[in-house]
Image (cartoon, rainbow, N blue to C red; front, side, top):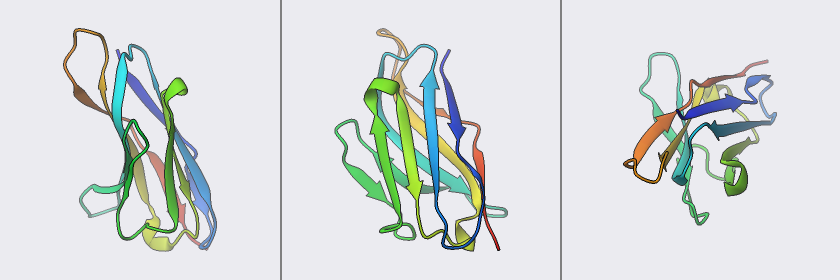
Length: 121
């Protein structure tokens, strides 16, 4: 069984930085895309950033030039470095991985449970 566990969230002042991590554990055969999404109160879940297995990245316009996504394929882990944080960045951040858990299983999407990021003075 695959589990994704996020860490690194917390309370930070405007202008500050946080680094989120998400590690996949359990049965992991191959991981394609990895990504971060967020959901704030009263809003739909939205894409923050994605990264392909080869390292190609994509960002939401609202976080470009402030956030950086990266991955360590050997550790089945994806990171999100968040700089110049704003109150509007406050949300629960979820990681998602598109993976094949075993050699014979189909490709599927897996989500973490989320980590809270609060930007406030």
